[in-house]
Image 1 (cartoon, rainbow, N blue to C red):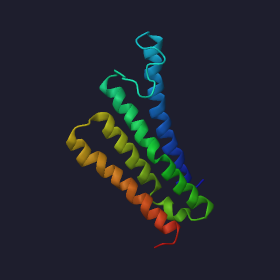
Image 2 (cartoon, rainbow, N blue to C red):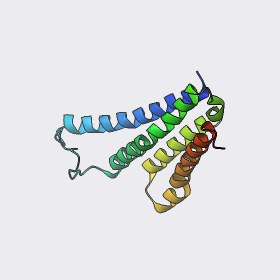
Image 3 (cartoon, rainbow, N blue to C red):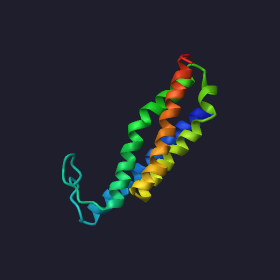
Length: 138
């Protein structure tokens, strides 16, 4: 398996870990009769603690960029150009994990400015760079 595919599996694993945290929290809240099972209906006013809100937001952020990352990794694979993505694929996953963990730790503006946003920029820059290389634009 190429490094790009390993990175794709790692990214999926990261998203699943965040999803399992959401499931565990919601399951506990329902099983302990602290919330009804329909408490998280979209558009509803959910009164969850700040940590759960940050976990939920980190999951949403990870899901927003998942199609882009997975698409680039698959494009590299099917065009036999994984040499383009292999070198930095795990850096991308690391930047994604750093962004998520910083989101879980704090939403303080310095954390956002010094950690979360730069980690996000690394991801976007890599996606753009890879796409340009894979499509022979540069």
